[in-house]
Amino acid sequence: MSQILPGQRLLQTDYAPVEAGLHRFITELLFRPLAQIWREEVGRRLEYENSAASDRTSLVKALRSGRLQYSVDAQGRGIFSGESNAALGRALRALGATFDSRERVYRLKPEEVPTEVLAAGAAHASACERAHQRMEQFLLGVQGQVDQAVARLNPLELRAEQATTRVTEGFQDVVRRVGIPFVKPDRAARARLSAAYTQNMQLWVKNWVADDVVRLRRQVEANVRSGARASTLAARLSARYEVAQSKARFLARQETGLFMAQYHKEQFVSVGVPRYVWDTSKDCDVRLGHQQLQGRIFSWAEGAPAKHMSCGRNCNPHEDYNCRCVARPLVDTAYNAKFKIGDVYVKEPS
Image (cartoon, rainbow, N blue to C red; front, side, top):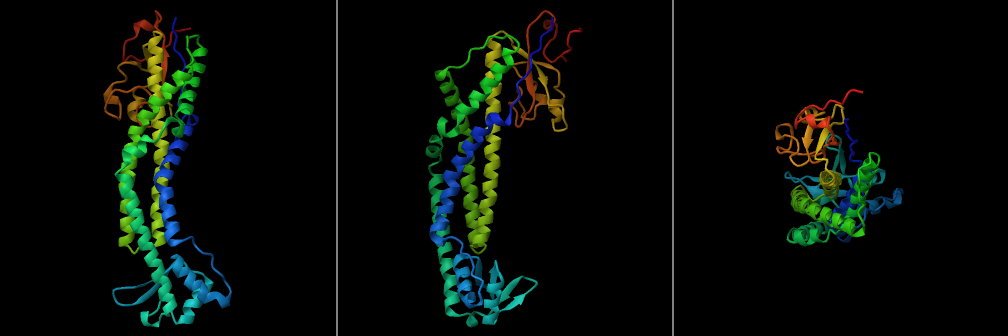
């Protein structure tokens, strides 16, 4: 009699709590403080007034907020650049500025710019300089305390127990249908699993934070070199924020997959089921090396042969990056005993 058990797939709901926890952690550690520094030094963006009587006021406000900037190029030509609207256009033309349709900027000689307009632009430039300096100091501080920051990432903040509980409950549902004994983790056991999960995740996060701090410092420095524009810095930080979101999803999925693989290995080996059949998702996204493992028998202890794995070492399903394959446990029956490691499994004829 043959017996091959169903496998447990890693679901988005399994790692979603950890993804949210990681995203919140990196936001509070890096991105929210940077945004706060900018608000304190530069201030919030101001809404423009559109009446003709307030055109000059709108221009001054736009320059103070950084939505519009005035600079002098190498040829000594004064340039108004940045965001614009009808009121600002009217105010600039009233000053005698001309619109350069090719460059999409207004031009006006420095000696023709009113003092209050120059002062508004200078005030914003000074505020931006202070903001950039504070951001640099903040990131340097975080860079020197990465270990302490990551150590504060505890199981509760990470929502580790939610992820490990979802995996163990999914495992329970699989084995219950085939009659394999399973002891549901009690509170103490869940706490141990959660703590171990968090400890493993902290190693990933430590490298992530250290790398992100360096990259954010480069973005701030690059923005200073390119003119310290508010809109440019916002775009640079927004891009890094999107990368952080993707990284949180990747790390949550990867660590939960590793936890699932290790948990399966321990549970099945403990009840005398040391082997499994590799089962892919059977779609066009399955990597070639994993396609070659489809239907073959491997052991939990040794994993699949390294020559087929993208990570360069023996792995079980879910251990390789973004692996969506599953391990279908193979019960040691008389029929199954004739198959060796690496054989393609063939079900017993009905």
